[in-house]
Length: 309
Image (cartoon, rainbow, N blue to C red; front, side, top):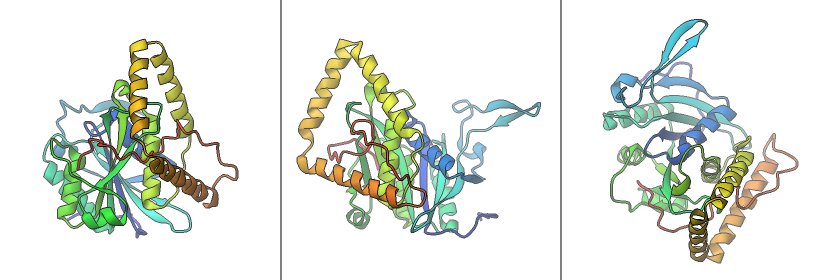
């Protein structure tokens, strides 16, 4: 039995989860959840027992000093709650941790226990994968689900993926079998620049989450970080003719595959997001100038993205 003390009654709660590791190229997804926790000042209310799910030789604990006392932080998965204000405020149950080393079914069941106790209406799991996508274009973000009705209602792809999966795919299927609506959001990270961080992919995931849940997420320094990241990769590519040529090939393939109507959909989404930010309480009176290359927004790319369940 999961006892939750000190957690207030939640408003239309949605669980948003991300896990470091195999499902988190460039740390884009876990950084997105960390951003939500930081911007909305989330407080951790629960943590899973690390000994139940982690191999400490794979994910080692860390030692730190606090007031002259040595302490240990154990690798685990933590849950926090944040409230997103606006015309229709709602709560997000944030789940951030490391992909477990063992007992995945028990791990998912424990998270679903929290979801049930908190009255969670939807689970959104974010991930990032390596793909043949150029860093100079908007980051493709695909939204997939195993639920046919949910796919139609929320304009998502019904997943057809078959092959190896990670905790994102396992958790989504566990939700489906438990009757909990679940969605996975996947950002494609250029495989030739896979090292973290990737603020452009993080921003793309948050933008897609905004659209999915119809809420406003403060971006903080992410847009500037995304522009700086792209400038840095541009400089590295310019120093290597083979890389520059390869990037150009990816750009041509991407531009050829994109349809005019897809680009129109992307523009419409950006305009809706601008209106939401302008009208939201606390929104800036003068929005920052959009940057087509570094905004991180989804370009409506419906190519085969290799995303999982």
